[in-house]
Image 1: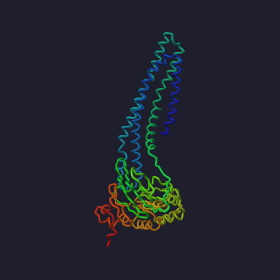
Image 2: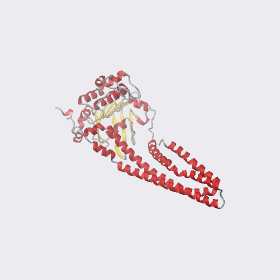
Image 3: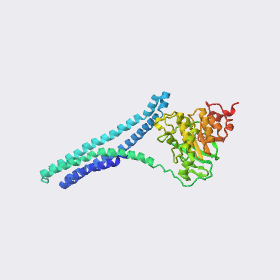
Image 4: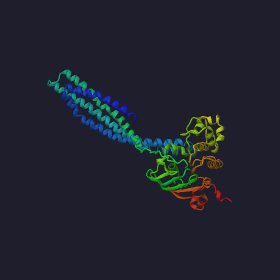
Length: 445
């Protein structure tokens, strides 16, 4: 899309010479210019047909090209998992599955372009030949001199350069198609923020009222109503696809619901001051991304940077301090020089969330790669060593659900029940959520 202005300027410059030659041809002999102009409607129709056909082909080509690129990026991100699972051939087939469609659109695109080039290459020289033929007749009748006919032939040759604008038009069509794809993103509604402050004495009471979220036309959350008292640790459990991560995103306003309302300490998130909202809502994810030149800078990364002692305290609470100090330069070790396992990366993500913990802390499956002992240590630190507030734990772990104050059991995008784990455990469907996990601690003798 960024090449369009340059292409337009180049195309305009390319058109100036033929247009100037056409004016000069009219000055030399108006009848010769009229003969050339009589063929311009055909040329205009040819170029218009090319622009319309090419635009559609290019749009479809770019869409499929983007789909292949997206699949490739996904595969590269999970390269180690793919290698370990031995599914390289299957992933290669998945990434390249749209290739035949890309080939079809590409071939059609070049066929449209080729027909336009051939058509203009025939039509423009034909017009030039007709101009010279009419000029010869006018010379024979004494209406033109030999010098005027020679000048007219040169002007006609320069005018024929109009047929060469097909290349610039093709580039403009590609730029326009790309610009329209970009415009689809720019047309998305801007997230609106308010300036309403959260109450200073709030403890992190979270409320979801009739929250509905759809993705690609399919509902993910269906009229969810949920009230989490301030200071409560709530575990959110459910089968894969139940809507747990979407609930976590809505709770901290990483996404807005299609309908319904989310409130924190009585203030709708859409009306809250965004700067304060980011200070008061902390997140840890299953696959954290670390930003910063050093390990310490990555843990302090955020709108407000906590001091080094607070960062180190958060790392101890997350069980990360021990391995960080074993790095060549400790917390000052560059991230590029710090090889991290999946569990270590998760601990750093949890430590970063602890360092920025506010009245609401959301852990979206953020301890899934931790061993049982470390996970237990993190859970205890979450309750004892981190700033008091509400905890929302998206988890698949039985032990995490058992340690929470309350459990929100999700099923098919709805809240099926909210109750203590021991009470829910009496339901066979609830026990099936943890099928294949460790035995329930509350039932141990």
